[in-house]
Image (cartoon, rainbow, N blue to C red; front, side, top):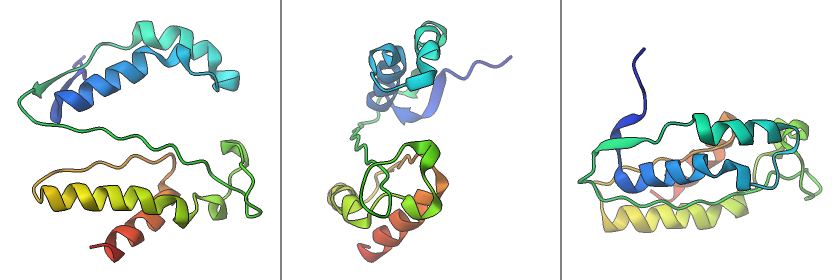
Length: 130
């Protein structure tokens, strides 16, 4: 079995962030029925490293809640295709990306979303902001 705990693409800053998140899942207060895995995962999760330890890096986390059409928050299990995050909620994220790219045209940016259906609005806004 090949171990997958050595990144060949991410900077040390990104990998350290990943390690911090996954090693501290038990501190999250909103796992509901998944709480049992938070006791096992931090122990089973191998610390990750990177061969790209010379790369600069930056991590920014924005957690946007999905909303029902009437604007109230919903749980992921209740979410429907039309309930993706509001475009207005995405604008600050897009502006952050725009600012980062203007400062470094050769940077690489990763955007993680909960579901693929959230990619469409993000890609549209990115195109609109060049």
